[in-house]
Length: 209
Image 1 (tube, rainbow, N blue to C red):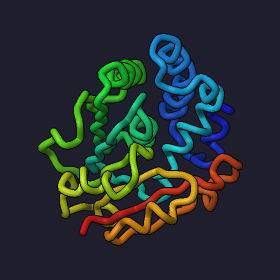
Image 2: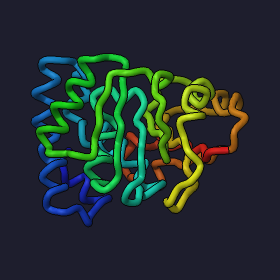
Image 3: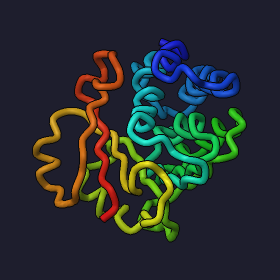
Image 4: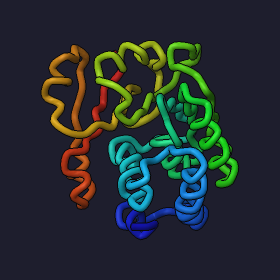
């Protein structure tokens, strides 16, 4: 699994984007040897389980230039770093409460020459800024997550979908979604990606009220 997997679904990458995505393998192997940001058994599936999974959000919304995106609980930089490569004219703020993970995000961003990423050790409750979209990969159940980020999203936006939350989640979400009183829409990533890994993977889109 390598960059060919990405080109299967995103055939119009620029030369620079191809180089940046190709560089992720070595960068994450190097950093993972020092700081465990990706499970050891997943590092060989980096492009499928982390990079392409992150880019599932891009199948739901194509961020236009100037879009401001907050990645909550980014860990080693997912989904924020792959999205920042794909949308170089959008601005990404990646936050995590664990400092060593933010160090990895910072170092990977610098190595790739990404100038559209700001990485910060912080909890989302501490942030005073607002954004067009909040993205995240399954940091908790959706209902409490929406409580954390509800007031971090501003209303005015210039994308094809209204501003809101784009949440990557897997498995049977029946019980979890029953708790949510907001309007939402579930997108099955198996509609966009062929690999068996994506059979139960979803993007939950919650537009701002």
